Length: 223
Ligand code: PGA
Image 1 (cartoon, protein in one colour):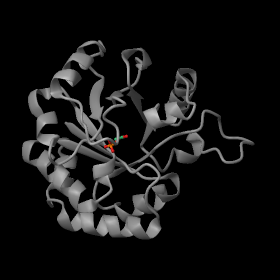
Image 2 (cartoon, rainbow, N blue to C red):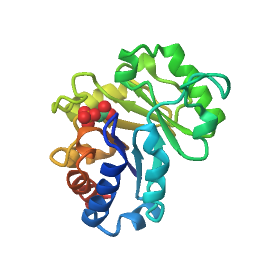
Image 3 (cartoon, rainbow, N blue to C red):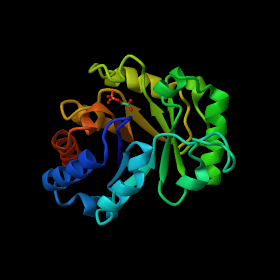
């Protein structure tokens, strides 16, 4: 199975999300829901927190899953402004943890570990983003390699860099290895070669629905 994860970061509002869904569903190959049901691909959209539930409703008939971009390190309680695992647990199936942009804003490895435990207690599947092997959480089902030089720059890492990074990670056979950083319709075919990468986390090129539909269609042609 090849995973496609779309990280919208802090882009979009309700109006642009509705428009995105309409355009995407018109442009994507209609077999995509079938491919998800057959386990050939999985497709998870990670919108900003206020859009999680509306987006879940908008795509409800299409087997697309909805994930959160972050989770509080604190439990449910008197923590104004925090989004706890408990409040996400019946909306989001997945959560992104340790994204380099959050590590730059202060998420230490200890915080990422705590958030990981919160995600597990809320039965939310964690995607742990790393820039170096020492950030791996061994129990995480998904490890997402996102080299800083590739995130949001248009300069994706080369397959040889990704392959050698992966071999330094010593992942367990059940752990999925995901690549993120300037993934686009122009380079997605490369990332699907040789079963090195089990999926991709797409930022910039998930924002435009026609571009993202093209990327999904290319994945479908190989999956
Ligand atoms: P990018 O972002 O595709 O714009 O490089 C990827 C990410 O940060 O998840």
